[in-house]
Structure formats: C-alpha cells, structure tokens
Image (tube, rainbow, N blue to C red; front, side):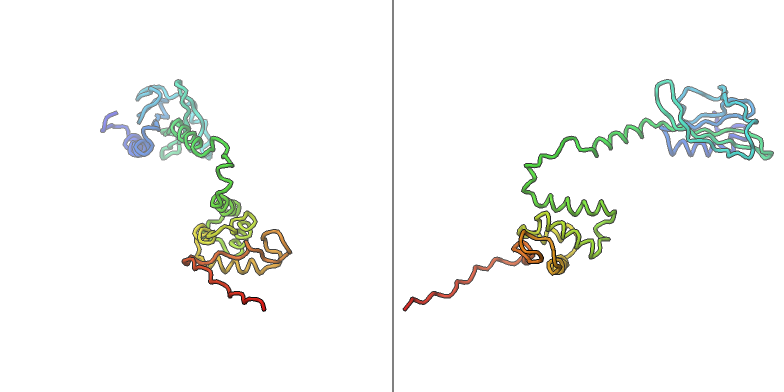
Length: 247
C-alpha cells in the first residue's frame, strides 16, 4: 500500500484503520475490504498472511438489510496456529446506502488470556495456612475481623459509621483481641480512627447490658472488659499501709 492512492475509500478510511492499529498493535489486525470486488484493499498488522488484492470472501453484502446494524461482533475467530481472536466488522456504506467497504478488526486474545491466568495464579492461595503458627497472633485475628467486616458489607474503612465500628469492636471482643495489652492503639490504627474514638465506643459497648465479655454474670464487666489505658510510662504501684502490731 502506498501513501498516495487514487482509491477514495482508502483516502477516507486509512487514517482510521491506522489509528486503531497503532492503539491495539501489535495484537490487532485491521483489514479494509473492497465490498464491490470482494477483495482486500489494505491490511495493518497482518496476522493471517493476507495482503491487498487477496479475496475477502465476505459473501453477499447486498443481501444485508439496510435497517440492520452495520457493526457486528465481537465474535470469535481462530487462526491456523491456534490463536483465538475476537473480531468486529463494520459495513461502510456510500452516499446511496450501498456497502462500499468493510472494516474488520481482529484482536489476538492470547496475551489477555495469559495475563488473566498469571494474575489468577498469583491471587489464589497455594496451600492451607499453618494454624499453629498464627494461633497466638492476635493481630491476625484483628485483621480477619475488621477485613471480614469490610468485605462482607462492601464499605471501605473510611465509610464505616458508629454502628459499624461498634459491631466490629463487639466481634473483636468475642475474638479475645481486646483482652490483649495495648490492643486498643492497634485497633485504632486498623480502623483509621483515633484512640479516643475507640475508647468512647468501648465505653458505650461496655455500658450495654449483655455486652460481649469473659464468662460471668450477664452484663457484668470482667477484667478483659476494661479498655487499655493510654500509652503512658508504667508507674510503680504505691506500697499499701503498714499493718499495726496487734495489742
């Protein structure tokens, strides 16, 4: 194909065909067919060995209903080397509404399928988690509770409301996370809120009859129900009063 051609269809459509080929190349073949002669006018990024002047074998385009859509596909095609294509064909009509040319785009699906398989292999777990290695890791339990809630409700952390956070803290309490020393700062970081927010919610949770806690009387807070103190240096415990000798 030369840069200058007397065929008005090439002058009109070659820039469009080249633009599509540049955008999708080298994975897409773009073919412009002569509808009147049923032969190939030009090919960009050829895949099947066809060239200008080769038979198009398009069939009887005049039999197409003019009221029908002029764009067909995507439909599957197969090359002799086994590559699968997704193809789209567009009938280009002249001023009288007769088919003048057909534009076909054939996209090689192989690279996309390989990329999808690679991503699926990386995303899928390859072996069960060794639970003995994680049974003491309370941060794993914390992440599972918070991450599970986010995924189950389809809302990001930033959009969790007060009731959501209360529900998360209730589950963390049941999982024993809040009984761990300095768990509150870690929970605050995981929820992307301040420590004071977590302490306020915990106070509200503890004040609710039947709140989750260690075994005991219903609604009676246990040792694990008391929220962690803020991060301050540990102060030695003051000695108690000295017992007086008995008379």
